[in-house]
Length: 114
Image (cartoon, rainbow, N blue to C red):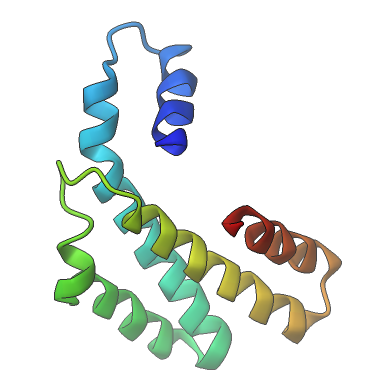
């Protein structure tokens, strides 16, 4: 709910004809697309491009995730799954590369869960 309000306020500054209902309806598909991209990056980081493509394709067809990310289904699961997968990706990237920036981003993602 806070995410929807933040997106609404950010877009309202740019567009005058936006309604909160529109943002709430499109939250699921917006985060579903972003989750597929993060799943690709996560799979690519683990084992290569092929694994990333399979991970992204599975995120697009798994019924449990599709039911939580359709347009009009305003709930927190689509955002939570995106945040969880993004934090896992950043953690694995930080461990593999030894990157401070990825480690700080992964720690920030863990801190936001609480």
